[in-house]
Structures are given as C-alpha cells and as structure tokens.
Image (tube, rainbow, N blue to C red; front, side, top):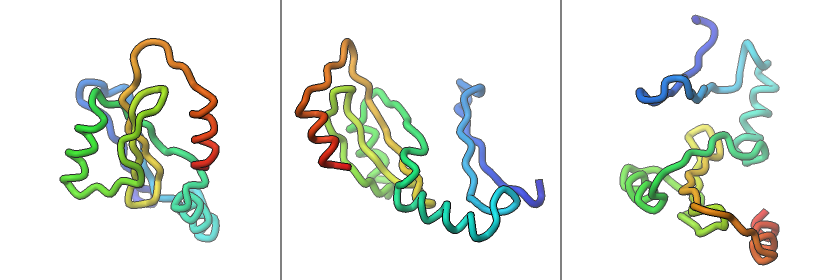
Length: 118
C-alpha cells in the first residue's frame, strides 16, 4: 500500500489461518514510539509473538538449526509437551511446541522451575 508494508503468511492447506508480520513504524507509530516498541520486543518484554505446533519438536529443531536458525532455548520437556524457543530477526519471541496427548498435570516443581526461569 505504498506508505505501509507488512507480510502475511498462510499455509496453502489452511488459507484462513494467517500470521501478519510488520515492523513497528509510521503510519501506525511515530518514529519515537516505534523505536520503543522495537526495543521492548527485542528484550522479550511483550511475551511470545507466535506459538507454532509440530508433530516432532526435536526434529523441527534439528532441521531449522541446520538451516542456520538460532534458538534461545533447546527442546525441553514440559508438562504440556516438548517445546523450544527462538527470536526472529526483529526480536519477536517464537515458541515451537509438540503438544502432549492426554491429560496434563502441572506439579509444584514445574511451577517453581518456571518462576526461576522468569
């Protein structure tokens, strides 16, 4: 649209589910606000930008690592499955998760570990 740029990504088999990516800046934000937003995103202060699922988290991690993707967290067993984390070139926090099957139970040890990671 000339003065605005963004990228929309969708899978060919699921065109109704889309991810919109954009760099903070005019016209939505002033240069000053855009710089602040980019700084907060880079620091991870805005939380996860996207959570993607996979059937095999470790395999996805290995394939993406081989392509040069730099991860901030290797695949880790969680009560809800196995997941790993990375940041895109703009600093957005992205998690890739292999969801657990069946009921999920969160222990006091899980809660303590998550609090210590924060």
